[in-house]
Image (cartoon, rainbow, N blue to C red):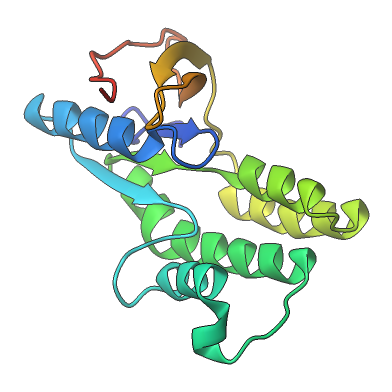
Length: 179
């Protein structure tokens, strides 16, 4: 991705229900209206017919799939599988074609939810290493921290990760915060 025609990876990361999806949508709309090709995605994924959508459904409605129990490590392995699929089939081709990718979540969430759920850290690290390898040299960078109001009125900190331009500068964009 050293080419000046390469897209940029922008990541929104944070807890559930704090407005990441809203902010990602707002930023994507702004970029699109500015003439920048952009695609908005989330991990594990919600695209109809994708592995990520299946993993999302299994995660949130396991009984519908006949799953009675699932370990935290097993669940995070499913998430990583969905990430790997999305990285190879959608994200890297988009970035290489010059499209910017606005991503709701990154592998950091897999680490946090895995550790919080009691998964074996060394196994979790190996799973995440596979995802890091799939990303190759692509890295979101330069966190921009700002305050937002969560859906229940709580004040929260959110971070926007932007990949810097080739000259090292990072642009800022007007982003509507949730009410």
